[in-house]
Amino acid sequence: MHGKSVFLTPFFKPVAAAETPDIYIQLITLFTTIAMMKKTKIPQAVRYLKQAIAEENQIIKVLAYKLYYSLCQEMTHEYEDVLRFAFKEVVYGDPCLVKICIITLEELIHHNYTKLDSHNFFRFIYALGCDDMCIFMREILKKRFIFSNMNDISRFYVQSVVYCHTFTKLPNYSIDSAFEEDLVRIKFKMDAPKELIIFLFNALPISKKFHVLVEISLIFNDILQGNATIEDNFFEVVKDLILPFKLIGSGAGVVTEKNYYVNVCKSIEKQIVNHDPHFNGECHNVEYDAQIRRCTMALLDFLFFENAQFADILQITLFDAVMHWIDFVKPEVRIIFQNSSSLL
Image 1 (cartoon, rainbow, N blue to C red):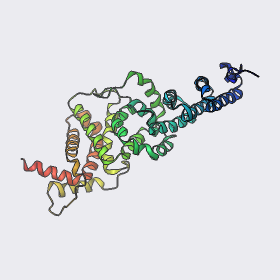
Image 2: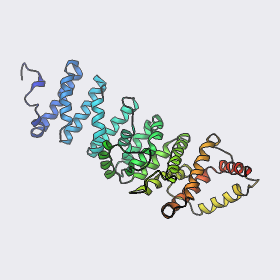
Image 3: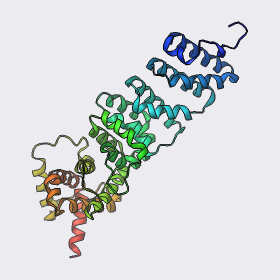
Image 4: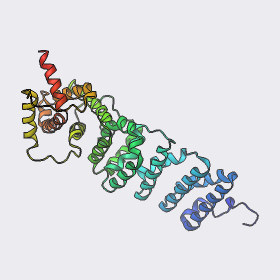
């Protein structure tokens, strides 16, 4: 080796990774270290690191990815290959590599090295719906992603619900054929998709929640007008689109206290229908009057849609959501009801 560049060492061949993984790991570590000290060696180091992250050996792949990421952080600030690798391996990699990719992707997203589209957003957050990853993923998102990326969560929320079910028959929510293979893999890994749906919605501020609910209301209108194909897991998708109307009032949206529905019905009859003069409920969401009107009517239209199949499958879910929704916006709904009555 005397008098030769270390990058030309005969040990560094594709077969070395399988035959002598320890030497291979030491060499790529050495090459990366040299590149960090001498810029002219960066292209060679990058070439070898690209080769290393393509290895089947998971230990080599993980180490090479971490070295490549460090080289980009310290020297090149060119993350295209790192991002391409991370968005692929976060779906197909082993659990250790998936966690490392999630950590690095969160950093790159936070520092604006990539802008999320609906595909990469879902690749990044799907782990919320995996029992073995959800706690880890929540902690990652709570640090800063939720605060910094509320617009992305709001913008891609409904599409993410559709992706959870790989449903392709909703107007305006088609699934790109190039993304279908990843979705099949993701769906296989997700054993608790509802956890994702609940966590993301609850993470949003009230203004973004209303934005999501209005978007869902438009989908309900499309369905009632016959613009959606009722097949496959259609009703499972619809149930998860109804859920946020319950979540906005109940938070967790899982456990409902005893006598809740009876109490809400009594309250509606007394305070809203019979115009109880002693009811002075404060309107906390007055600035969202238009959104509340639209969502309330969409829910009620959906609840009373004259279709036996819908009634049989969705009526209980819809009733549950309507009760929580009206309980949350009672003062605003009371005003809406009064205004509508005065026009009769």
